[in-house]
Image (cartoon, rainbow, N blue to C red):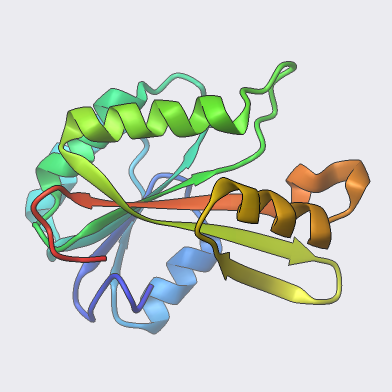
Length: 172
């Protein structure tokens, strides 16, 4: 969080993560957890500058349109701010593939005037703690995932973080 925000700025979290809320409080950031995109217009004028928005995809509620959500985020962000979308395992009977999730996010980000600046693969394994691995290609990511996670349930230990900034931003 310290990379993307400064003290007295605001972190918006659509997933109500208690760890992120605690980290925001510990580092003097304002933490907001709206329930939908419409809440952003009401919250933004009453808080310190919003410098980071986090959201998981696919959404647990399944009701939110990713285009609407990213457009609302773009409207409240200053030029040097970021949206971090994390692709997580879906709980659906037929969950969308990583490629489907990534394509939906990239398309919605493009429409919202956001450009991808970074992709991070986060791997977690029992007893070893969390690890963040930066990679340069999809093949590298696949190798990291296969190498470090249990074959029976790889998705439980793997998450991709996609970092977006306004297209004219210099962050990244």
